[in-house]
Structures are given as C-alpha cells and as structure tokens.
Image 1 (tube, each protein chain N blue to C red):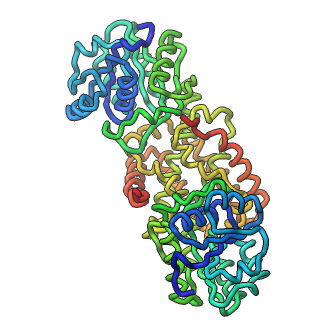
Image 2: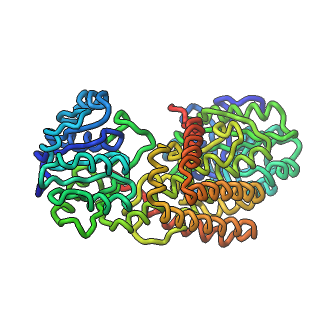
Image 3: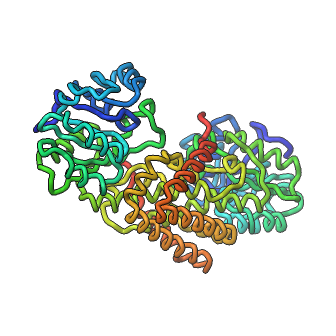
Length: 289
Length: 289
C-alpha cells in the first residue's frame, strides 16, 4: 500500500482495550473497512453490536488476512512475534504491518529480521494506555490530546513511516513523534515503566488498615496505575530490564537527596527542588481538546 | 455555640483555594452568614461578585470577629498560630474555632495551650487540596466524595467535635473520620507528604529534553502534584519531619526490593507485588457522586 485512505483495508489483530480503541477511532471517523481477528468470539459480537468494525472473526481467516493492506497488531509483544512467525505466509505482498508494543528492543529488529521481504513492519507506540483491559473498556477518546510515537529502523521506507504517521493522525493523536528503538526504550523506561514501579511500590509500602478512609486525591493519582496487568507489565519490564534498572537507580539516588535535605532541615534546598519541579511540570499538561 | 445551623455566623479567615471552596460550599448550600477576613481586598471583591460570602473585609474587623460563632482558619499553619496569638482577645466567649492545616503536631496542642479558656479549638483536615492556589481556583465540588478528618485532643468537648463533624457534612464531604494528632500525622506522612516527595523527585530525576512530546497519562498522573506550593509544603514537611523520614525510608526499602526482583529476573515475585497492589488499590476508588 502507498497511502492510508478511508478505503484502505485495515485488519486489527487483538481486540482488547487498545485494539478496540483503534477500531472505534477509525470506524467512527469514517474508515470503511476496519476488520478484526481476535481470540474470543464474544468480543467480535461486542464490536459488531457497537458498530466498531466492518466484520471480524475469532479464527485465522486466510482470505481476510490476504485481503488486508494494513495490519495492526494489538497483542502482547511475545504473542505478536509468535503470531507473525506462524502466519506470515498468509500476508499479501506489499502489506504494511504495525504494532502497539510498549517496548521495542527485542521486538522490532527481531521481527524485521524474520519477516518476509515483501512485507514491511513499522513499529509504533500509542501513549494512551488504560488500567482496565478488555474491549468493553475501549474508548477512542483516550487518544485525543495524547502522544503517538513512530519507531522506525534503517530497514524502514519513507512510505511505511508516512503511513504509520497517517495512522496516528487518523486515530486522533495530538502529537506524532519519531524515535529510534534505543531512544524509545530509554524514554519509556522513565516515563512509563518507572512510574508503574513507583505506583506498585507505593501501594504496597504501608499495610495500615483503613487508609482509604483518610486518603486525598494525591495518593489516588499516584496509585491509579497500581491497578496493573501483571502478566503484560512483567513482560515489558523484562524486555527493557537494563534501561529500567538505570532509571530506578537514578530515581532512588534523587529521592535520597531530597530525603537528606529534609533530615538536614534544609528548607531552602527542598524549596528549590519544588520550584524546579513545578516549572518543569507545566510543560506536561495535556492540550485541551 | 452548640449547633451548626443555616443561621450560624461563620467567619472564614484566609480566602485562598481552600477557604474559597469552603465559602462556596457553605453559602451555595444555604448557610446565610458566611463572612470573611482575608489579606487582599481584591479577593473580597471576587467573593462578593461570585455570591460566595455575605460580606468580608481585608482588615482585622473587631466587630466582625466578635460577632462570629464559628471561625474557620484557612491559613498556613504558622500564620494561623500567629493570628490567634495576636488577635484572640477579639473572640467572643463560646466561639468555636477550627482549621484546615495539613499537619497537626506542633499546631493543635500548642494552640490549645495558648488559647483562652472560653474559646475552643477543634482541629480538622479536609483531604481535598489542589495544586493551584488562590480563590479564583476554589471549587466546592472538590469536597464531594472526599474525606474529612476531625483531629480532637483530650481538651476537646463532645459539643465542639460534633460541630466540626457537622461542618464536614455541610461542606459535602463523603466520609468523616476521627484520628488523634499522632495517628493523623503518621497517616498524612504516608498518604500525602510522601506522595508529594515522590512527585517532585520523579519530575526532577530526568533532564532529557522533549519528554513531554512522548509522555502518557501515567507520568502526568504521578507528577500532577509536582506543581507544588513550595513555601507551604516545605513548612508542612518540616512540621512532620520524623514521620515523613520514616515513610520515605520505608518506601526506599520497598522500592529497592522491587528493583532487585527485576535485576534477578524474578518475574513471579514482581507479578505477586503487582497483583497485591491491584487488589489493594480497588479500595481507594473515590465514591461516584
């Protein structure tokens, strides 16, 4: 394929909270041929009932796969790799495939190396996860105002990169950026993985009963993502272990510095850290949509 | 006074984001005599223009103070103590005073010891802060579904405790609890102060440019409170230093355990921590209002 249009035949593999959000965003904005393959027949029924897809199946439908120009894999990283290994003979020549994986090392280059030469894989990461899983929690609105990161390698063509960027725009993302695999994984270790480690630790670091009776929104905000899909996130952490360990160590070091300012009653230094944080945080507000 | 009614003469001292929220919540729900003393005349104009108060002044109005049955101090803890020390001769006998201070050690007992015998101070903590300050950001809705903590000592009467609880209800809080000064400060060190230390540290622990272009909501959530009033929070941290240091050390220890699980590629232990955190977090969802 050379261009994403409202007539492009799009196949989404894996109709969970992200795949479902993609289906809604695309179909509801006028893409006419959003099809789907997913494990549970009930999820296809749900998607059809909500007008999210043109049609779908829970089976490996050879004709459907061959009839797809753009295939989006919304699967766990390891499942994604196995799916492609097993079924890539069914792709039509010229098909572009993309993904939503939260880690790129150990996925992108490996997948490109095993993939047929007449099919191109261009990787992407939608920065809009949710703590709930399942198609019934999918929501196209979460992409509005959010960031979309395209992660090309030297193997990728301008054509596929442009199609992937056009997909991000079609989904409604506010900002579309490009990073290398290494840049992506370093960035994600800090912005996403470290935050999940902090939330889980914070949730578990006090076992007093009844804390929920006294809590304010600060604690609620810092632990929203402590409701976590343990299978997926342990997989993501392991795939990005070195970068994540580095970020965890930097955080511990910085946190100890702040702790020591408090122990030394060094209010001025604490205040300087707070002012620096306040100023930096301004940049991260989500654009109002 | 013996009972909070729609006719109680209520004085709010300090019309910032919290004092302003109190004024709105009370006046808008039918309390007829919500008056105000605050530093800036412009804030009185704002409050009058928004129908938030019966009337107010930026001066120490002796008649207004003497005419108040319930006085709510929405000031920084140290400013609150000085205000009472300086002006308590103006209170009428039988006046009940309360506060919104985020820390209670070094405030409650000290204030009760210097206060006139014919006036009673009952302390409370509304768990509904906002990262913005100023009356123009005040919003009565933030109290809906939130927690309100009354912090009595042995000096307090049942009468004042009941008035303070009735105030929490009048403001619209969903859950009203009672804690001792020590329990409160231990709890707040964990739920509120530790979370602010984490948010500030996280914000400052990576100086890569352009991170805002790649961020998702996890990082946004964990750093919302990194926009912080440095003067107020450094004061709160110092007032609760020992309890906060204890919580910071517990957090560091727990975080290192999780870090070591990752280093050891111990996915099973990481997953067990995640499942524990997910289950605990369920309790902290805000009641739907």
